[in-house]
Length: 454
Image (cartoon, rainbow, N blue to C red; front, top):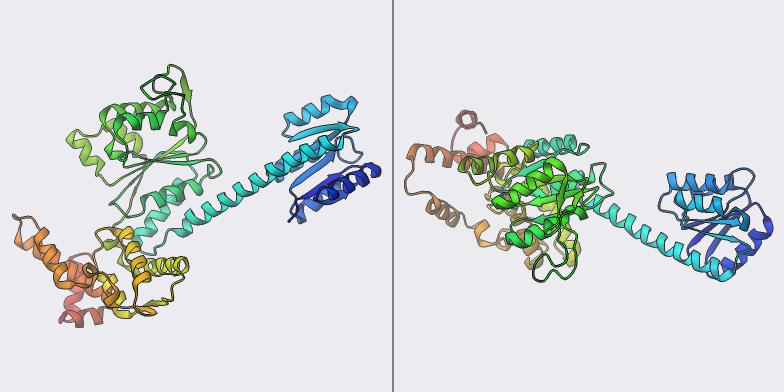
């Protein structure tokens, strides 16, 4: 599809020349002598590049430029000006024009400049589509869950997103901490700036320091060129520090300084670099306990823990399991062109009752596996992996994992509470059915639910 060029010039001869020239070059051209009509056209049509004369009676080229820049910042504007008005063209460049050509212009010069503007428009369009795709993929609406615990998380995200305050997300592995971090970014005023992620556990301390802060040429063996770190790359946007609890003492000190002053030096450098970033950190470690043990700096903990979000494990939000399972099923059916259409009620019962030590990530893995390997169009109990469907193995494994020294009464209460939760989940949270499945009266079930605060 040819690029659409809007040409504005009050001299009709130039309009005819430009229309013919650009059409012959393969562009789709809309040529208008009234700039006010041009601005109205922009509201209704998809335009790739605006080519406008500088001097027109109703609106000047600078007026057009300012309007486009304010309302359609992705559209490059090419200015045409008479030879004696170079100063105004230079001013237009300062205000954001892509380029200018002087009248009378050479066809080659105009076409070359326009070709570059069209390429810029194409790149900006791709960037916009990418941003929209990322916002759609990581927006708040993609955090699935109607449980009380997840509603609380979403409320925190909604409140925290507009600010620049540091956020600390804590929770077990696989609970969706990075998804929440991205949702915070894309719901914030920084959404059009970079979201940069770094896993603090994936790199050794020496490499991680360079990865975070960058380095100067010759600062260590192999540093053949200067390199910007993640802090610089994230400037204006959000830096996500995953597994923050794994930082060593030296890096904790350096991170504390950046959080306090928003400036740092590269490895081997002496020049201070100032950045405007929002920090979101995540960890599956109990940082408060790490502080008490002396493994994590208390002052850094308080700098990070400005807005605290606790991600619930999947076993504590079981009512979300059917929604998540359906979401992942739809995703993998589409990706794998599978003929699977759903789950049997019995298979859903097992999914609801399983404790999911790997949380949402494990559930996602199981659904993908079932979608690929299911024998029929419905995922049944036999299609589930052994650890999900084998109740005896689950129970034996759970008992074997218990510590050798424990209080019997407390342990039995925990097991009873777990059985109550499972019975409720398997019976769609209908208490009468759960009581019947457990072989107890509804009144006794009510008593035990209140006892365990379920």
